[in-house]
Image (cartoon, rainbow, N blue to C red):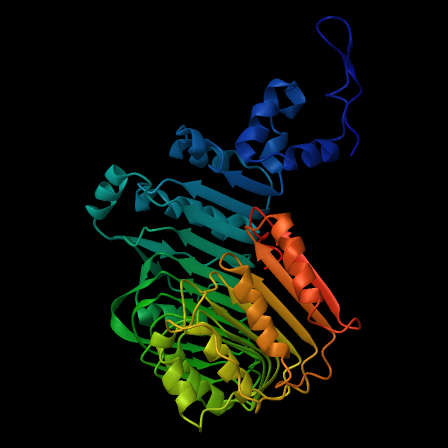
Length: 476
């Protein structure tokens, strides 16, 4: 839409700002960091004073909270002044001590006007004094009203477990969130029955659910039944006894919370991630193949590897002997599922890591890519230098080796590689070796590269990369 013709400014010059089209003004203001910053532009020209009030997205409190100048009344005022029929994105960030009774009016605004994403972020206490204030607070109830236009809802209530989320009743004959596809609830208290009813009956289009740092009011089971859910993550949900999931199109199950028993009916399951101690897994309708299986605790390993015959990518995190890996490997009935990529990692001064990795390789089948991540490479194993491997391991499918390490002895790294390629091993299909060294100078990298290069035939590609300041997160 074209704006009014340019006018003369106070000094007689042309006012080019006032002549800009409204659509262009909204495009400019939409690129600012927050709605508050957009509202400040009203000092530039009279026509700008109300343009911010019909921006497609509102971001409130994000910048002011950093300077300690956030006013909850300013959030109320901005929502009251908003003039567009619908807002496509609403993000509100407030401090830890925000009273729960201030929030319902913001959620009612979203209930009436939102046609997109809602993000409510209550920041965690930062100082000791703030934490003491937080601990003294009583639990307050925060009711969730229906929101027919919400497609994504994220409640990131860091550390504020004093908020008890309680969904309201849906409209007669309807559901609370008919368009919702993504839901994340973090750091709150909720009743397990209310959580189950919300997910199972009030979100018919839900595709992704993340529950993190929650506390159930009483120790109880969580039951989730959804015909649309494809991705479920449960991280540190306290007071959970059992987790029951019935989701016919679920593809990703990610459990990072202690649960005594997990019962899953998910015939479309493709990825399973278990980062906690889960003694009992029951998969009712799942197939025998996974695209990815990731395990951090050995206690969950045995039932999982017995359930799945083949995995495209098997990731074993933070292997330490004390976690039961030695007992797992001593049991001849425990074999790894057939996998194309085996990824293993360890942290700390873990002397038992290398022999466990080599024993895992003996249990593997059809491994094409081996990825090993160390945060520390010990110079000895169980108090003695690394020993030579026996000659009963053949890696006749292995094509790639990738090793990441942060610190330790480069000599041990080279020695470990020597064991992999010694005459007692067979890797006829090996094509490439890549070494990524974090917190190592380039000069060390050059020396290691030459030593590794000398170990392999010229037809094998050797790459070594040094990251003196640490490996970028996007590479890991």
